[in-house]
Each structure stands twice: as structure tokens, then as C-alpha cells.
Image (cartoon, rainbow, N blue to C red; front, top):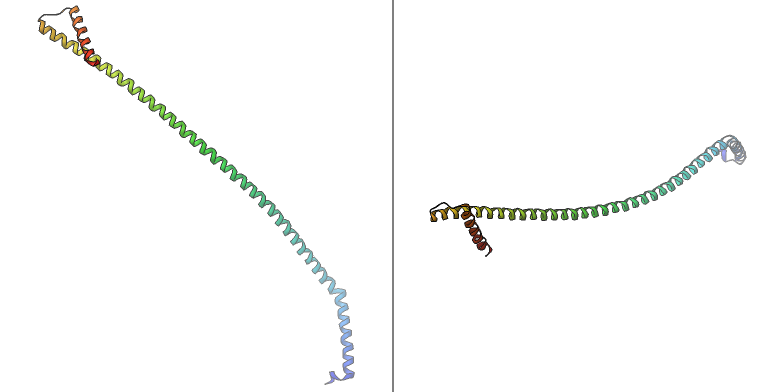
Length: 168
């Protein structure tokens, strides 16, 4: 095998080192700056993205704290509104109860007055009918026509007797 001979092997190594050096120089001069530039640009984009992500995270945390504060405030306001509504409902119930009690007392008083009025009216009607009956009986008994004075006298006596019987 000719590549393993010592004359040939040393010259092969020389040319390999030389071609590697030329290739490395060409890559160093032309390819590496572009590759390094792309890598640095990419590194910068990644760093900017991380910084932006940190800013967004801190902004999100700030907004979350604001939201929680607003939520707590809203909850407190809701509790206050609920307490005020309960208090108002209680007050309205008490007012309605008082109004209904007053209305019931008024109706009861009206009914009592009406009953009292109707009772007096009935007593007057009974007195009037009793007076007429007494006069008719008295005329039959006496068999003559009574004068106005007699009518008045008999009526007064009958009413007095009737009122005594009601007083018992």
C-alpha cells in the first residue's frame, strides 16, 4: 500500500496540513465572519426576546396586582351594596308593617264607628216603631183619638221605659 510508505506518508501529511491551513484561512477570512455575525445577531435577538419576555412578565404581574386590587375593591363595594340593600329592605318591611298596622287600626276604627252608628240608627228606628205601636195600642185601649200632647206624653213614657230596659 503506497500511502503507508514512509516517503509517501510524510509528503501526504504535509499536503494535508497545507490544504487544511489554506481551507482554515479561507474559512476564517470569508465564512467565519458571516457565521459569527449571524450567531451574534441570533444571540442578540434571543437576548432581546428574553428581555422583552421579562418586561412582559413584570407588566403582567403588575396588571395582575392591579386586577386583584380592583377585584378586592369591587368585592368590598358589592358587600356594601348588599348590606345597604338588606338594610333598605328591612326598613321597607318595617315601614310596610307600620303602614299596614295603621291602616288596620283605621279600618277597625271605621268599622267600630259604623257599627256604633248603625246601632244608634237601629235603636232610633226601634224607638220610632215602638212609639207608633204604643200609640196605636193606646188608641185602641182608649178608643178615642189622642191629641198631640197625649202622643208626646205616651212617647216619652215609652222611650223612658225602653231606655231603662236597654240600660239593664
